[in-house]
Length: 102
Length: 161
Image 1 (cartoon, each protein chain N blue to C red):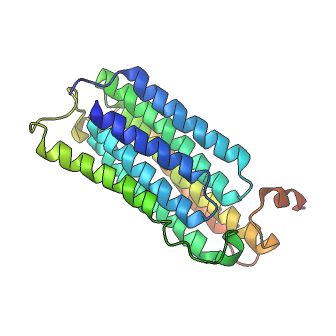
Image 2 (tube, rainbow over the protein chains, first blue to last red; image 1 turned 90 degrees about the horizontal axis):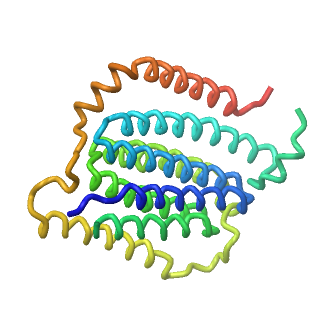
């Protein structure tokens, strides 16, 4: 097993991040936007892990744990917002949320 | 290197399938598959703690939260597809999962019993770094989790004021 070059790992992370960004931009359902945000956070964590493994330092995994915390908090609040949105509009369309007043 | 190529291909394919599905439950299952592939990748580049957390927290906890919310919502309004059951929708995820399983068997049987990467960072080092120089970050993460908990409770109340 030859070690994996850093460029490949960062390329994979960039590709996953781009996929998540495309998903967040083209989908209208709030649920899919949250999923795409998860994909992007995961891609960022992947880049951190690859960079940490390149130099053999634990800092990459520490950053991964922080990203995990951010993802958990974001999902928690985002899903609560999604439930409220669904109760008000009976739909998950993100464009409908523009009609929310106050 | 073969492990990297195979699992990154599985991750990319399943991520593409996540953002193109109509049914949210299918998208969730593909995202879990993508997270499994990324966990294999973490393990193969010498980050076993990150691989375990990817499985336990991401695929185990966060995705289950998504599944709960999807089940709380009305599934008829979510699934815009045809009501007729398509009998073959399980084929692609099963194939991708079998690819990951084959990769696991390959790693366990063919390769000599030594770590895949040269520089494996053990969980002890990560813990020492986490509670040594990054102690302030851990405290801030706990603040963030508390804020997320209170925010979700406040937003998710059944009767909005």
